[in-house]
Length: 504
Image (cartoon, rainbow, N blue to C red):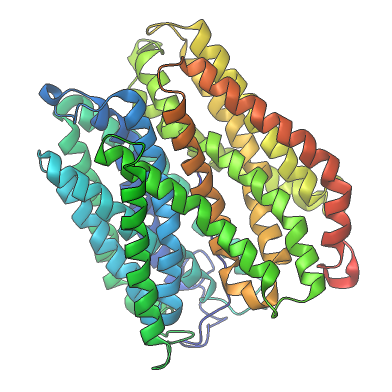
């Protein structure tokens, strides 16, 4: 899935024990974090699987009655909000309360959000969506950081531990659309949201009971705020609130509804914040000239990643609409719930990730290079957009065979395996030392900006066929792929100096 793993340096909250092999040969704490992440992802992707249907269904059927175009934009900007708020989650863990408490509080907020969504009232539904976004932002960057703190930097089990942890993400995200889709089909939307709340409750209980196994991981605050810094942070927080309100009012100049104003305000923030990050890196006196060349090489890779997520994250948007409105509802005599298609990607990840890991390991230092892999991922996602354009233009009503959408999800999974893990590596390798702890925030912001761009394109193309929307996405992405492919030699030369030994 699109969840990124943030491997930060181990926290000083207790030395990792190299002799602890209680869970599949790994530290016992990994079992705690494995099942916490599994249930949290069950909760998140279960809610996400039915969110668009809930927003756009009629009031009589338990939905909110929003038009499909606006509902799809809301889902996109909701995703952007999660990744924007993950920057705050990382800050809270590093400077205020530590990773463990940030994870715990985030989980509680997420559960409260799902409970609000389980209440059949429009006001509580919007509050629930906001709470889930906030809680996920608090939790998302920190569980994986705690995995890293279970191992020393020299522990040979470290990479394997993250591989095991990564499987928990995909197991949870595979089963949740199946379960929540069944509940929505038989008992309504609020039963589905209640199941997500139960999943999050299990994650919280597991996390609390497993604290001892973590042996202090995530308890310390790595870089606590000084007394002199606190007023500045409070001022920054208040300024951020004022800025968001100002953007809402500004959007009122061209938008008629509060919902559209919120979509635009979040979109502006999601695009402006990474621009601010890059500007700060280029202008900072703490960034050496050589490091600025690394950042310059990273910039086109980041833009490619933004375009990738713009298309990929429509799994819960335009692709969910195709599953509901354009795909046949039976296959081999089995009734197919539209939510089930969102289980294709995590299942394919589980099956294909070891294959790609083996290929990349065997080809290390050879063709394809890191920038070429990322460019390939961007190109494949662009082709998937053209595939969706063809599907929307070809199949009207519930006539598309199940294999059409399944094949496009599989193509997108291959694209993800080319770009996502490689992009994480490039981010950490090319980040300036002064911004090393913030490098993952910049990667998350590519996902946020991509979904914000998708939201704006959806609103701008309101009234046009979905096939045209995907043509625009595909052509735009493939055109940038050509640029990125042409830049591969230039990027490689600049990446070489970021490598130990001076070569890629």
